[in-house]
Length: 505
Image 1 (cartoon, rainbow, N blue to C red):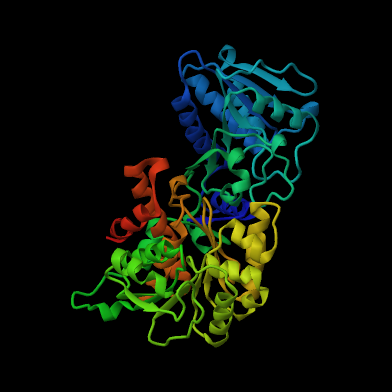
Image 2 (cartoon, rainbow, N blue to C red; image 1 turned 180 degrees about the vertical axis):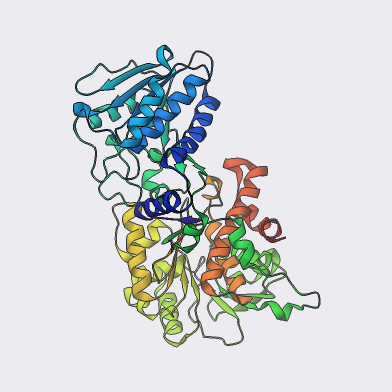
């Protein structure tokens, strides 16, 4: 799914109205239908509804919701904020007229100055239509205090398009207490980039998309800077296997992984690679890992370094279709030296994860040796150790865009919406996965999956995008049986094959 900037959405909206014979009021009706259904689905006995509408088209949406609720027998308390009495947009004024035409069934207050706040409580559902994604400045004054009051009330909050006070795109230096904390946000046609940021999770709450039928031709021809990766996107990437295939057709992956006390990382990575379809998987590890790997993953080949406890040499090997380095290798000086010597000679893209990234953090010059279009897969802590501490998830993502372009590498920034950052600046937010995957070794499995896909001939960007999604689906499957607390990385690895089957076939 494409994710557009606020300005792009505004343009698509304009094209829909001008070229396809759809009025702005018809679009407002479609938004209101979706929001009204959500509000009604949340109502329990004795619950009350308060609708807060601003003077613009977000307020028009909210007034249309209030009208639809009244038409269905509910009696919402409606507050329209129109400072000075003359600031309503054309559509907001029309929606106000339609609402008031219902007569005595409407509890309506138009706020033009000071007013008495309703006594909100957890027995309320609040419809937040104060400000939409077009907001350009942080909330101040009375609106800021109103937002704080709504947040403190304990009411369920249904926000229209975005929580009031949140910008749709980037939110540098936002003050969370001055932004609505929605229970659910009903996005109009598309999720906003801001929804993908960890910083905004408590503001956006759950989010859902209302399809209001914006111009498909305008959507297709508008280039998006952001994408939400969904099943059909990955299905288009994955290729079916020919009937007369042999294992030689699916490449050979080398996993440089493990050290004394951390051989489990090598095992998990190898299991992920095998379940993701690599024709051959070889683990390169210190001698101490031989019995561990051969016993736990008999399908994998094993090559030992000339050290008993850590990796002290990595040689480029042309016979491997892909090479991944990092899970459990540690950060001994000898290992850092081995990684440096390898990168100086390696020309083809590689996958770098875990301790390979920690080695880079200890020796920053390694980053400049990483081959073009390699894939690095840091979580937030690893990223900050390499590129410097970041004050927020949004700032980290901005830095990732800069570093991906500068080093011409792919950065897989792991998190709730793991983000694949391409050197051309495009961002791909992954939609699969769940909190149960926050477990030791989960990233090692992902490394194996991406390495396996690259071994099979998928381009690094396709391998990263598909690998992250497959990993998330495997985690979702594991959570179905083991629950949010019980999932282990081995469970994720065990479900990789089924995940691919579910996605592609």
